[in-house]
Image 1 (tube, rainbow, N blue to C red):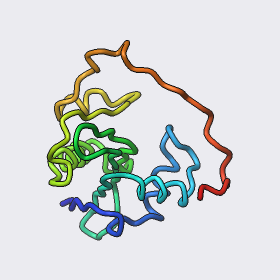
Image 2 (image 1 turned 30 degrees about the horizontal axis):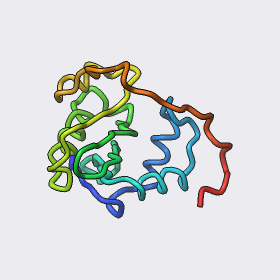
Image 3 (image 1 turned 180 degrees about the vertical axis):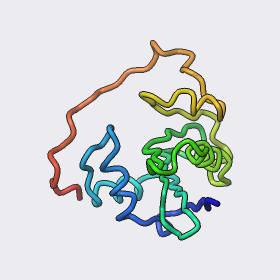
Image 4 (image 1 turned 90 degrees about the horizontal axis):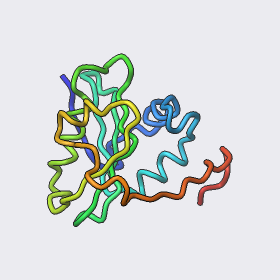
Length: 144
């Protein structure tokens, strides 16, 4: 059985950092960066196993009205392929604080099928999207 919780104080930040530091999109990320990102997010959620150990994490950056961007979706390797990632996304999409959001976005390198199962599709207007992509700042830099 998996329990889903939301809120900054409900997360195990050491465990979240451990998980995210293994993710290909932010290898070696440090706790201060993880926590600061979470503090500046509209919603953070975690998945916890029966022992209370955090096994999943995700967050949304949003104005809580028109737009939400899902980021840092991570499930511990030993618990993958059990629907936990999809359940975290459903939890997020149905969270009362996000009830007014009508445009949800995310970027994925390799989990398109997972997100399709919860209603996502490839953006309908990909040529409208633009980006500035800077290199990550050096680790250990003061983020305050």
